[in-house]
Length: 361
Image 1 (cartoon, helix red, strand yellow):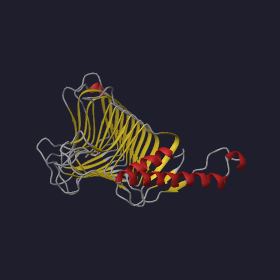
Image 2 (image 1 turned 90 degrees about the vertical axis):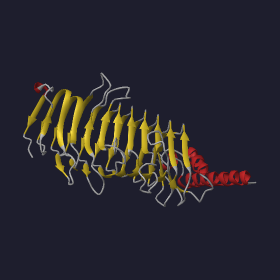
Image 3 (image 1 turned 90 degrees about the horizontal axis):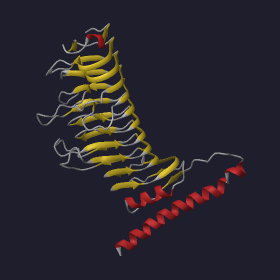
Image 4 (image 1 turned 135 degrees about the horizontal axis):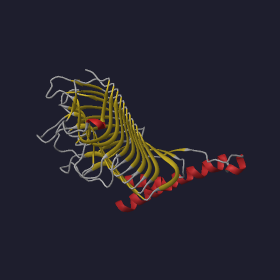
C-alpha cells in the first residue's frame, strides 16, 4: 500500500510539472510564432512532494533554462547520474529545502542555489562527502550551506564537498562548516571558488590537487578546531601526492584567513611529495593571513610564481610566528611588496631562482 501511494504521489508531482510546462508553452506560443529565436526561461514551483526521488524525476523532465523552486522540506540523499542539459537548469531551495547529501555524477549544466545540506555523522572523515560532483561539467553551487553534524564533536564529521574529474565548476557565496575538511578538488579544470566562508573545520578549508585553471578568490577561513596532534589545518592547501598531473594556472587572491575563536592554522600551503609534478604558474596576491602558526605562505616544488601584496600577521596567542617560507625545489619565484615578519628562504634554494623586492614587516 505504501509503495503504491509513493508511486502515485510521485507521478502526480511529475504530471503537475509537465502540465505547467504545457500551459506555459500554450500561453507564450512557440519562438517562431512570437518572432523570437531564443527560448524563454520559466520558473516552476513544485508542490510538497513525498520523497527525494520525486525531485529527481522533475529535474530529469526539465527543459534547458528552467528554474525549479523547491518546497520548504527536508529531503534525503539527492542522487543524480547522467542528467544533461544544453543550457543551465536552476534548482532553487530558497523556501528552505534541505538534503542529507547531494551526489551529481556525469551531470551537465545544473545550478544549485540556496540549498542546505546537513549530512549527519560519520567515522569516514576523508572518504565520505556531504556533496559530491564527479565527472561533471557546468555545475554551480551558490548561496548554500553545507555541513555535517553541528554538535561540536570534531571527530565525527566527514568532508563538506568534493569535485573530481570535473570541469567548469563554480562554488560561491556558500558556507562550509562543521566538517573534517571543507572542500576537496581533485584532477579537475576551470574551477572557481569565490566568496565562500570556511569555519568550524577540523582540517583544511580548501584542498586541491591535479587541477588546471583554478581561481580561489575572496574566501574567508576562520575558527579551525584541530583535534588530534596530526591535525594542522591550512586554509588553502595545494599538493600532488595522489595527483595525475600538476596543478597549473593557480590564482589565490584576496582571501582572509583569520584566527577567530578557534585554534591556530596555516595560511596558504603549496608542496607535495610526488616526483615530477610541480605547481606551475601561480599567483598569490592580496591575501590577509592573521594567524598563530608558522607557515603563513609556504612554497615548495613550485615553478613560476608571483607572491605579492599579501599581509602575514601574528594573531595571539601565537604558537609560531607566521612568515613567508620558501623551500627547494623552486624555479622563477618573485616575492614582492608583502608585509610579513620575515621571508624565510632555505639555504638550498637557488638564489638565482628567487627575486625578493620591497618586502617588509
